[in-house]
Image (cartoon, rainbow, N blue to C red; front, side, top):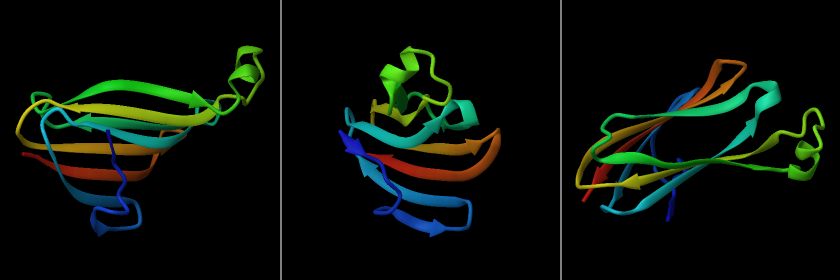
Length: 116
């Protein structure tokens, strides 16, 4: 599994947008981790330019306080969101991940992915 982070791959950065180039192989699994807090509207969403090259494999949230969330505690829904992507075949694809707070885009990550 390959963790996608912009820090090691950034080629262009502005206040709200980062663009990175990645080179991966067919059958690799990529994952992206982000802060999630549903009750305050903190989310991330993804867009894949070519689903024949890359697909979402799993979308999961690891809650910081799962026991309190089960009991219905308000505000216990903070955690780490995880997107898992599977690389299907050789080609080029763009993966865009947008971080939002209360439906307002705060940050956009753009990964130009070359699959060898």
